[in-house]
Length: 481
Ligand SMILES: Nc1ncnc2c1ncn2[C@@H]1O[C@H](COP(=O)(O)OP(=O)(O)OP(=O)(O)O)[C@@H](O)[C@H]1O
Image (cartoon, rainbow, N blue to C red; front, side, top):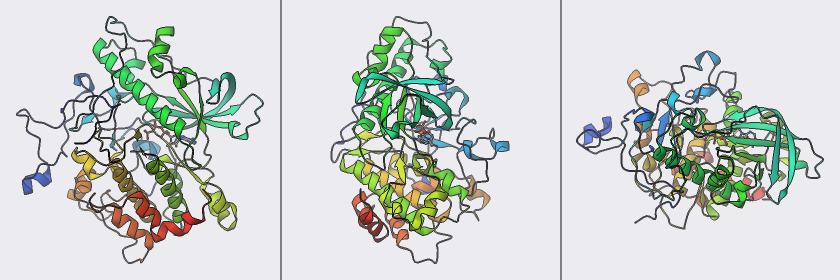
């Protein structure tokens, strides 16, 4: 039996079941008699008493990371399309998990069937209160006071420069230090400001039990991300420098403690290393398919090393995707650096977004179904206990394919029929349905990695096998970290 995730909530089996409690059958299943959990039911959020674990939803239309150019990778996140299409927003991603999305009420949320994970429910003293919870919202905060992890007693100040990103669970801002700092890394920092669920932000009257549940998920998810980030120390992984309130570091139940003090939900800012090149999705798509294989090799090899560091330390990421690979410098600068010694000496990427990561025991299987739709492995889609390391290597295969082919493997192929286009991405994933187009006749070492990762878990390469593959080994051996 797999061990259960100690920090995930208990989520009853509640997803894709019809009135007789029979799983709905997929297109595939109706042909071969097997049940595949691919159909979606779309409940309204209000009717969800227990939180759906993974959710397919339409991301908010507004985003600071919207590239304003046409993107070659066709099915881009709802926020990464041209302005005219922003509100069409029909792109879906599977996300998760421990607390509902901010602005959930505006989004199309679909629950998938899930496997329960045990909960470490925090006992918020909310059962007696029926009034809305006051939330500290500070998106316009110009001056940030923060505390470094190693100097929690000394406040430092930064001034907001601009917003640099937005995800489902956070807004990310660039801040510049006001104080004299001897540490050059702290001069420009990125600040990840956690978005709270819309029900809390809008202060709608919440069922006290639901509020308690929601807050406990929020707290355990936040604490987990902070604790794991704090424990990581690798050049190619985003660095947590500090937080806006030391309680987020010192307490195991920071929200509860701060709410007792202030009777309102405190905001949480994570002060982190800044990557001026933005994310790899935007950078790669801006090349219009002209990213050289040697650059792909350099960046991908470093990413493999970062994931190897995580797996060696029993951490799984569970949300590896192009958007979460940040570039330390703009891509043009990286390309110009190719002949300089810096190219191999300095880290060029930082892996970000540890909101779904988890510390696991060796051999432990996970049950929380989470990730981003295009990158999620078949076993997570199926709702069976999965090895998080193998789901991470699957996602690495998706990333590498995307960089090489300039489209994602489970998008409908460019020459797809209407019927193929109408099929859900999850159908193609469940059938391992991907193929080379641009590289069809190319003999390239990199293809071997994709072939051995976008495959059944029993045959799938682990991170060490990817590390030792010819495409990665020569570059990774040359990196000093
Ligand atoms: N350290 C950083 N430096 C530069 N940009 C960053 C940094 N961290 C995040 N960003 C930008 O902000 C975006 C959102 O950040 P992040 O993925 O951490 O948020 P999230 O809310 O957890 O996202 P998701 O919806 O993918 O879960 C990133 O895709 C990136 O463009």
